[in-house]
Length: 152
Image (cartoon, rainbow, N blue to C red; front, top):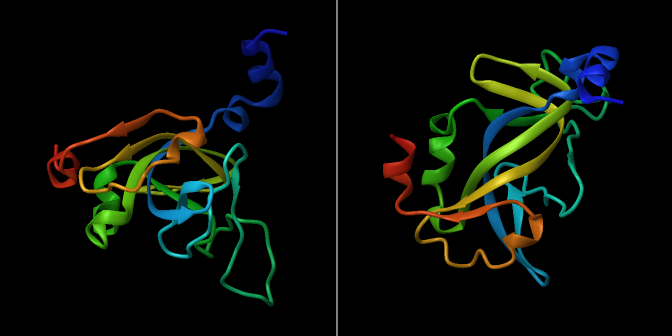
């Protein structure tokens, strides 16, 4: 079956992931450097998608993302939307592009989605302990100063 036919039959928007920007903390685990969410510290798995879960209400369980809740995996249209996360503890911050799919809510600055995985990881100068991020199987790019890159 051709991809174009699959997209028509199964609704193209369901099959095409959104691509956005994300910032992670680098966590030093026994198996090497790993990605962790900046706010909640969730470990991003290697070789499988990261699955969103709602932390807001134990009384109102639901599948993320949910309109009006704010839950889901957040990713920005522009890296500048996350610049404040890069400024806090910059020696442990990396950023990159993520693929977002499943239930997805699009907003003015980006998306919230049910599932995501890294598509590309950028390691700014000064982040020295990133050995092991190669295990995510995506391009890993070492860069110069973040401030210069974010404002281009």
